[in-house]
Image 1 (tube, rainbow, N blue to C red):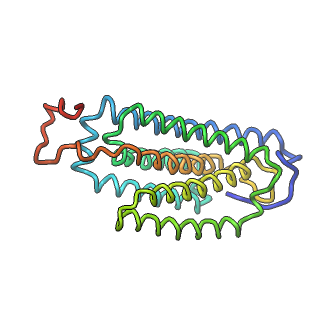
Image 2 (cartoon, rainbow, N blue to C red; image 1 turned 30 degrees about the vertical axis):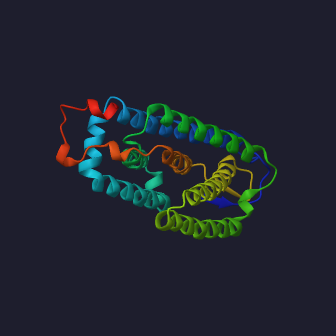
Image 3 (tube, rainbow, N blue to C red; image 1 turned 135 degrees about the vertical axis):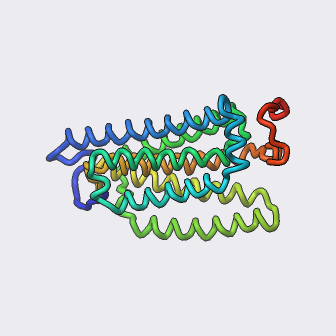
Length: 255
């Protein structure tokens, strides 16, 4: 996806129209993917609430496997230039990856209130827009700091594992918030890095043919931030077990 070379920001002087067209295509596809995800998530906790609870209780393993398969397809898509260049295959693979990321979110949002869901979505959207604009206008070239981002990733990874273990073993709630903060900082740093690659004119820039891959990267980072907001309202204890499953009587779920 990325190629190196020194150019003037924000667009390469030899193809400014192509770069602008590429940027527009990336962000239109990114918005499309986000809207697809939001449509799924709102539908899961409104019109399809009963079906979502049944799906989580009876097919949670399948949802987890779908999420893992989506990650695998995304890695395969990122490594295969041929897959990204074939017109029909790249769109089909992209939509499958989006679905495999959106559908397993049912495990996290199954008993989420619609108001909290939309509030978290709007907060993440605002954060993504702010840091996207910041990355686009800042004079500092983040694409020069490949080693820095590797060190940042390893440091945050180790600290995050430590905080999660504290949260799980000792039950310290504040450790999860430290993990969330560190993880969000890392994701936003990568978001700004990818925005500058997409805009072009930096040491490293996105290839003009990789609009779908670039949009998927932004979508993954958006979902990663959005998943952190779902910790606010876990209500899985209100979901009936399989032994009490009765699809004709769901009035108690609203209490």
